[in-house]
Each structure stands twice: as structure tokens, then as C-alpha cells.
Image (cartoon, rainbow, N blue to C red; front, side, top):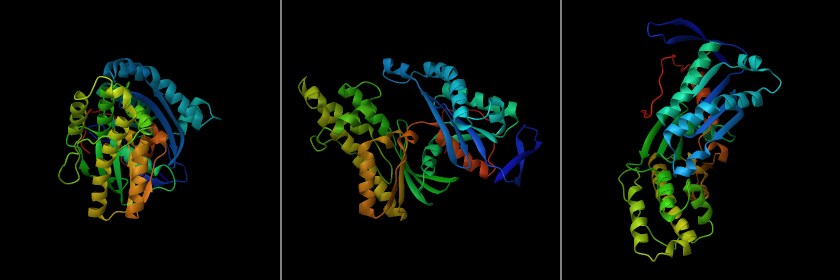
Length: 360
């Protein structure tokens, strides 16, 4: 195992660490607060011991996440969530003994809602300072990809990951835990955003994506045909699909949606999944990589999970599906990403700041 000790401070207060081999498990507390879930997780040598999430139901009233309300809820939830995660991981230890087990504190640094990110970042930095432990900042989307390394069997490097969420749609080539390259992404809306906005058009409450998935299982995916935008290379576009659905519904009778809701949901889901997997297939052909997986909140969608398994069978590829608890925002994915950064000695100084946007 590797543990890193503080050696000296530079003028900008950044830490330097000296690697020495010791026979001690690597234990990390990770915090996720990028949007509307407050989460904490403990990982020991790459094994997740706890993964607690506090959801914010207040946003359902407004049909979407309200940033100010999300920030306030994070401040209310972060202490009890971290406390619960520590107790689950170390049930026989008191709080001080449990904290003494930690080798580093990790947190989501970007991207996300800035107010939400700041709550997690400031908590992590304060705890790291008080315990004199290294600090590790984690990129939220990279963590989604690396969530596929939590369970066994895990994909072997190099692998391709289709990362689909409410804010991102990407094809990522993963050469190692620290070498992740975006080879395709949306040029406008994300697939998850398309699900939610079309669900709202249909009249489903927020969040509409999961409800659309449920209704789609009762409908005919070929009942209605919607636009499939043609975009160069391995990139995506979903803004045209939303417009296509809207214009189609404007031409129908007032009771059309209610009478055809299941078929509409099935057809929209089929269209989105088809668009996603067509480019993933192209990426497999161009790279020759036969290890594929999915990540992000939309990776919980039943149509996408079934579709990528069928694609894997056709392409003779190995397919890996994350557990549902690791699909949506969670701290376990931050923990596993931090574990690999710890092994490489990739630590941050206390002046690291949260950012709503971040380069890959």
C-alpha cells in the first residue's frame, strides 16, 4: 500500500508529499454535492464500505432543481450524511477513532451548481485541515466513468464508456484510471435533459426521465417516428428531437397525449437509445475496443441497459453495467476516483476552489 506524508510547504501553500511503502489500508472519505444529492462514502483499498445519499424532494414542487434551495439543503444534510457513512464503515469505533482511520478527504470539485459544490468543498477542506490529512479534488464526470471499477468484474483498460446524464452526453475512451479522453459529446442538449424536457411536454412530473422509462415498458417503441439528427464524427445532438416531438404533438387532438402516453414514451426512449448506441457502435469500430460500459444517471434507463447488452452481443464485446446505486449522483464514485488519485499522489492544496464548469 502507499501512504503519503507531508514533506514541506511551497509559497502558495501547496503540499508536497513523499511516498513510502507501508502495510496499511488506504481509507478515504468522499463527499459529493454537485447538484441536489448530498452524499458521503468510505472506501478502503478500493472497496466501498458505505455510500449514503440524502435526496432533496423540495425541487419537485418547482419542476426542476432550484440552486439556492439545493445549497441550503446541502448545509442541513452534510453533517448527518457524513456521520452516517462513517458509522456504517466503522460500527465498532467511536467518532474520533473512526476519523483517525482516514488517510485522505475527497470531494467533488467540478462541474455542478456552484453553491452546492461550495458546501461540499468547504466541508472537505475544513475536515482535511483539522485532521491534517491530504485533500483530493475529483471531477464529477470522470467519477461517473470510474464508477464502473467499483464492482467485479470490472472493464479492462482500454474501455469505452457511454456517459449519459441530465447535463452531459459523452463517449469516453479510458486508457487508465488517470487517462480519460472524450472522443464524442453532445453539441447542444444532453440525453437526460431531452428525457426530462420531453417528459414535461407530455405532462409527466419532475423528474420525468424515470417515469418515462416506466411507461415506455408498457408501450410500442415503433408507434411514432421522431427525428434522429445527423451529427459529424462521434458527437450527438438532442435539441432537434425535442422540437420534433413538440411539433408532432401540436398537430394532434387535445386528448392524444393521454390516450397514447405509453406509446409516446416508448417511441421517445427508443429514439434516444438508438441515437446513443449508433455512435457508440461507430466508436467501437474506429477504436477497435471491445470493452464497453455506461455511466451517469441515464445509465439506469432500462431501454439503454438492454440496448447496450444487445449491441455487445452483436459486436462480440464485453459489456459492463453499474449497479443502480452507482448510476445517479453518489459519493461512492467520488471515492473510487479518489482512490486511484491517491495511488498516484495526486493531492490538492487547501486553496483549491470549486467550479461550476471545468475542463476535462
